[in-house]
Image (cartoon, rainbow over all chains, first blue to last red; front, side, top):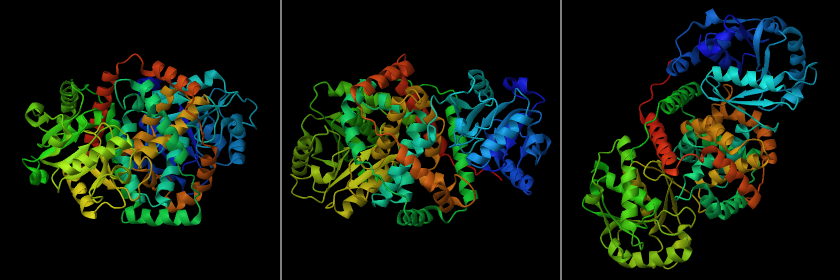
Length: 320
Length: 320
């Protein structure tokens, strides 16, 4: 048990929905020594979720966690109400349908301890929409992770306008204790932040492929060898600050501002129509169709662990 | 001398313009054992460029290059014509003005060996625009690097419609021998590829800050802890292929397509007006104003070296 998590000793984290996101949260919770209960209506959920959790453990160990026996820390409970009955946190990872979210939070509110932290992993449905059937509309918060959940540092915390600031503070403390990097999004907005940034870059990716400027494979290679390395180490604003001469961001904004606005005006606005989708799928198959998704995923996870570990080590500044 | 560069032994690489980009190319060329001549009208160029080159050497050594004495490999020649007289490659890094580029290529064509490789580092002016005063319009190609040039793998090669395919092939071979990752862009387009992707994400970054969804610092932190790590290891298309269930890209495109199109429709279209620039600069100063650009740059470079080295090592696939 990590010392930062000592206050949760002996308590249970309930995961509602044992798909990719739920299983990955469960693996991370268990790696931190928590007891986990997964609730999912799929009769085959135990086999499927435990396979995903077993696959996650080597990456967690590579990140510095002690190996653990998932069966000793993770159990399954089909009934949502029973699952959350003694939970100190409920991590909801169910279907992205408003009706599901509203009904499940109504049930959870009635079944979970009054002081349980209530968090939705939703990437799209804001807390204000999910909490409509709850009596207490100060308790719910979005805790949106980034796939793979057990590896990626970011958790976007998105309160509704009525979420109690104390709930936000407790959510920050909990996910920080899990080693996550939490940032509280200041307004409810579709896609929150990270997925909006992904949508923005993906639109131009689709446009460039659609227009024959690059192929899918070339586009992916360009990203991993330039902006990917850049943004793993410094965000867009800091990168611009360091991007040119000694004048930093003020000079860059003045000098590059007109160029950037011209590029903005020239960016593509493609549709994901059938022809575009067919082109992308054909080129994607050319690029990595020869490898299984499992092998590609294992390679990606190993690279992500390598990058995360490389950036976690104390970096000796370059001597100049 | 790297074996891949043996054919260039004893030959000279000419760098036109000794600013940030030119000095960084010179450092990389010299690290590979090439002789380099830098041509720049600034009377103080030798002091400035050699300071930048000296600052680049520790990063180059950290990437595996042998330490070297820059004075033994790099000289300065004010006259562009003399500088290129025995060059096997001319790497132009001058001002981004059409008139400058056109005049300098007219001079270089008249002064350089007939078989010299003629490459512009321009990030914005296509070869077809730069070559208008050249007699032979088959020789010029854009070789656009990504800052910091001596660290970042990518070189975007952008031929004009009249560039000889043999020139493209020689450029690919040369930059590949330097350890760069080359991709040939299939159409001249403003900003080529990597800078268009940066513009696309930056537009949404500015919009989110302008709308008070996040601060500059929060935005930068969200990027480095999510999409940055993702895109350092897998491009946007491969990431989508591995982003969900076992169905891969075909399933993701069908399932997420409508959501992505809705997000596209909701993306911001901000202006970089005075109020927006002032807000960004104020928040940026709050974020990293306490550190010097030199220290921030050294830290960024050290992180980039760490990421590049982490991804260069043979990655043992995660055992599943």
